[in-house]
Image 1 (cartoon, rainbow, N blue to C red):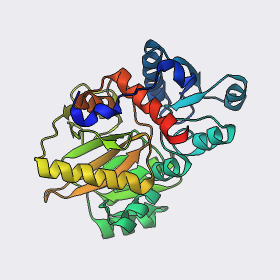
Image 2: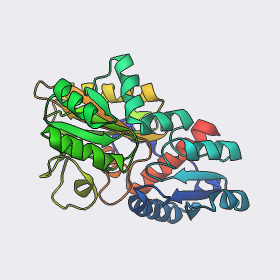
Image 3: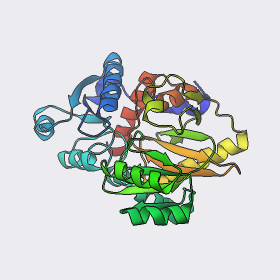
Length: 318
């Protein structure tokens, strides 16, 4: 255990968590990833002696939440319906404590456009962007931002619907494809350089991870399927730049109100400048996932990580 992270280990007795509902699955485009994450979390809790059960979120969710004895919920839903504040609002109304960020932070972080607006207002570096609603917007964005660009649905995760484009015709096609996932589509300036992901746990920033992929960017396949994706811890930055990245991450997460845990995605350009892309408030917990890797680098195994996330729900909301 690295001394700086020793206080992250939960001191809560498993029985004191009460009956824990692990909320996973759901109806978002990230359902399959959520099912894998949820089963991993559920296994870890049960093996630690926590009275936990899985609840695949469907149309009967409200009935299940009201009929089951639930002392707190572990939210491991990815995407809309789980990370966007709606689940958090429902649990607040029912008086059920839950893991992760609250309503406002969840909604903000899920909305890539509003996230960027908050960061811009505080001077946190994030790539230049435009909102696409028509082919005319695509042409205008291409003129203003130049190429290459990256197109993103504003409210999806796991790189779903994203595409790198190098021409106006590709941009229009990518906008149309992204529009099938979300009525609001962003296009961002492409940042050429290394990518980092930085997890936070109970208000502490975990060791950054440098990502490497043979794909044009860190897409869905690179995240969850490919076996050649590279993860570097230590991340390769010198101590001053690593501290700068960790300090900026703390500021970026604090700006959105992130609580409990989360994970920020960051690019670094050729001049060494960091650019913040987004924050995930319920990141993946699969065998390819990044938060467990960062936790291991801090000296926490998967079970300790899961218990630490759950313990934060007691600290935050009683």
